[in-house]
Length: 333
Ligand code: ATP
Ligand code: MG
Image (cartoon, rainbow, N blue to C red):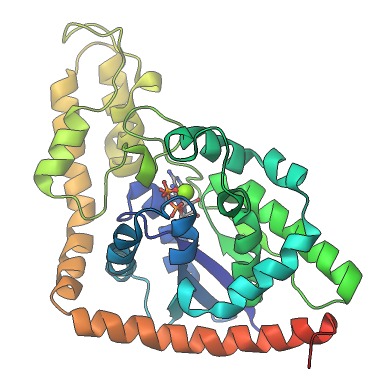
């Protein structure tokens, strides 16, 4: 039986945060138990450059930070092929082929791209680059280069996966049935909000708790998190529905959250005590991850070996896809 494939990845624009952890990393680790699946995880350094073209060193530094986060949460290189996007030239080639199949109007309508462009006004000014506008095309190339069918991503990526499906259908209808249509796989927690109450925790939004944060950093961030602004005195009744501390208790304090919210509503639990409890629970959850990360921090050669071995495997797979694509497009000289 042909195994299904999953393909996913992250942009090395910073370390990974708890949005990644609950939104996609846990799912990727769980998917490693599925024996009928071949898994690929890509460090998307080329895509990172679309909105960091002026900071190449930052992208380079974060390649290994993301790799350490992967290994620390339990992505196992023996079960998952971890590879580097810039070392797969077929992805760039496919991007060129697919750009004929997508209109500019369709890219501009993509709600994820729209939101992200609005957030990057400072970088792009009035006119966005061709590369950033087109990142859904290169993401379609990432996925299809490996025949990815299951794509474990956060909810913010749904419109980008939808656009990939359209590209696949169009390609197959013109050139023949070569590419597979992917589907997004969401975690139970589809999109994790930021410390500031923003709809999404994001590396570039400055509202994240990182998996590698120290106790002090976690404490500082939680202490500064958005709480019910109407609650002034300690015994005022609070509204947990508009409090980010209550929101994160939902993720980190599973057994205790009901009591926490009831006491908050009754004005029996002060914000400071509530935050301290959250800090303790976050640290408890992240401790084993940070320990494992430390192991790899001390072994840069091992990291390099893991990444290069994975990339070699990925290169062979992308070459196979390219052969089929070029044949279908009558470019097989
Ligand atoms: P950037 O701000 O640089 O775009 P990011 O935090 O959005 O960084 P990405 O590398 O763009 O992270 O996203 C990688 C994956 O993580 C995607 O599948 C995305 O959906 C998922 N993800 C990122 N942030 C969250 C979040 N807050 N909740 C759930 N999933 C998330
Ligand atoms: Mg993003």
